[in-house]
Length: 276
Image (cartoon, rainbow, N blue to C red; front, top):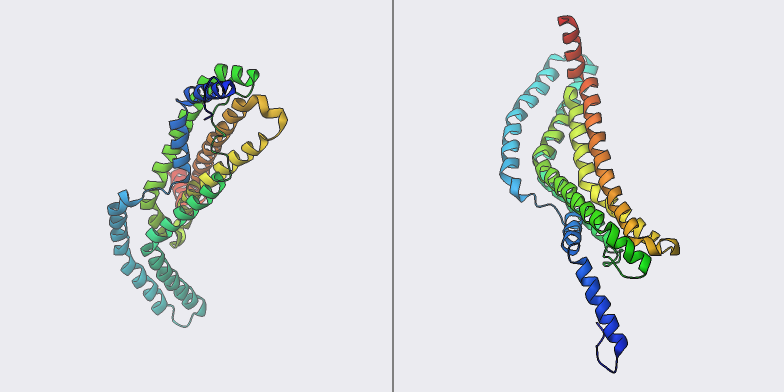
């Protein structure tokens, strides 16, 4: 901030505008800081350690049964080479599944760390003051006064969506080993694939959201947007919220189709048709 004195009146004007800028941005600064933290900080999954341990314990009960089933199929296969290979493949998948389920915590944590680092790298390319309101021109100031409330509500909605994503990722630690377990069971593979892919989408969602913010910040370098900064910022946060809504709807639709097309879903439809 410039020094304000009788000998430096321009410094007084600059200090006044800096003070005005801080007053205008007072309601937005904490929300913007929270949004940045929710986007770039790794999710704290340690809160669900005990639940993860419980799930692993429950799944471990089935390890022996699956290995016995693979061994039984190998024994009764006799001289049928196709059945013997199928039994060997089943046993191999069971062993891989056991290793991955036991290592699911480390795998999940690694995915979160990669996502956080990628997102932090993207956000680091954006000017920290980009999302703050400025007093660059009378038109820009007028739009900020008119649309300030809209911008505030947009930031609040963004915080709510990012907090929801944070919760889903944290709880996902519990479902990740279940997804791996299901993936290696033939008739449950569709469900396992759905759980794993859904969690990966939610984990890496901030990376794509930060890409949107970076692209929008680069657009602001074009002179045509100089006087419409607040409009561009509202649109950018609207887009990242829309992206999350789209992905949630997509996952729900994909879940419905996966359930209907799975072996269990087909059996249920046949049974329902016979009951009718």
